[in-house]
Image (cartoon, rainbow, N blue to C red; front, side, top):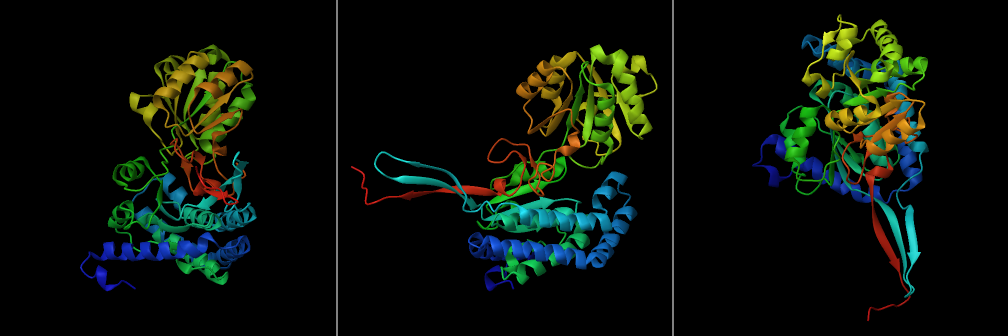
Length: 428
C-alpha cells in the first residue's frame, strides 16, 4: 500500500517508489537466505509454471492477438510467442538454475599477511536489480530465477506488448517464493505499461535499485545508458558477424552459417553479417549463399558479390550497421583475416563473432585481435547464450567492459566484500 508521503506524487511515481522500498526490504533477508531455501523456491516456481501452463498460454494469446492487430513484424511475434514446448523450457531453465552452485558466500581468494591478518574476498549479492526488457516473456522467469539464486531482489519491467504473459509467469514465481518462506517482494513485476515507470526505475527509486540491466533493442538500451543514475550492465544490439576463411571446410561452413542466421532470427546471437575471404570466392561463396537462400534468407550483397550474382539486393552502408532480427543477412567479401578484423572493428556491437577456419594462425588472430564479448571458432553464433555456456539461464549478454561481460548469470549478479580476521593486531 502506498504511504502518505507519496500522496502528492503522480500515481506511477508513487507506485514505483513503493515497489522500490519493498524490494529493498526484501533484499536483506534474501541476501542471507540459505541455499536450500532458494533452491526450494526455484523448484516450486518451476512446478507452478508447469501447473499453470494453460493460464500462461491464455495470457500469451491475448498479447499475440494485440501484437498481430498492431501489425508487428513476424520476428517480434516469434520472440513474444509461447507454446507448450517453450513453457516447458522455461520451467526446465528454472530447475537448471536451482542446480547451479550458489555463488553467495563463496571465497574467491584468500591470503595471509606478514602481520598475521587473514584476508578473504567473498561473493555477496548486489542487492536490488532492476531489469528492463521488451517482448520476451521468458525473461520474466529467467531474470527472476537468476536474481533469486544470487540472493538479489529484482524489479521486473517487461514490455507492454508482453504484459499479460509476464503477469501470468510472475504469479508462478511469487507462488514459489512464498512456498519456500521467502519474501514475496523478492520478485516484483511493474504492473502497469506506463513508460514513466522506466524513467522512475532509471532514477534508482530513491536509492532502492543498485544496478539496471536493460534487455532489448537499441533505442531502449540507449535510453537506459543516457538517463540511468545507477550503474548499468550494458546490453547493446547483437550485430554479430561470421567470417568464412579460405581454409574453412565448406560443408561445415554451410551448416554453421545457416544455423547462425536462421535457427532463430529474432535472438541477439543471430548472425547479421557474413564475411567471406576473397580467396574463397570461387570455392565457398555461392554454395553458402545458395544454402542461405534455400533456407529462406534474403541476401543483401556488397558490390563484389553482386558482380558474381547480380540477383541479390544491393547492400548499403546502413546494412553493415543493422541488426535485422529477421531472415536477412548482409554479405561482403574481405581480404582475408585482416579484412575481417577491420570490418568487425568498424561495425561490430562487440556482442558475438565467429570464425570458420582450419588455419590455426587465422583462428589465433581472430581470437587475439577482435574485442567482442564472445568469440567462437567453428561453431554457430547461436551458442551465445548463458544456458549453452553451462550457466543456467542468463539475464542478458553484457557488451560493456565493467564488472560483467558476456552472458550475465548468477556469478555476474554478485559483487564481493573482504573479510579480514585478526588476533589483536593494531596498525603502528
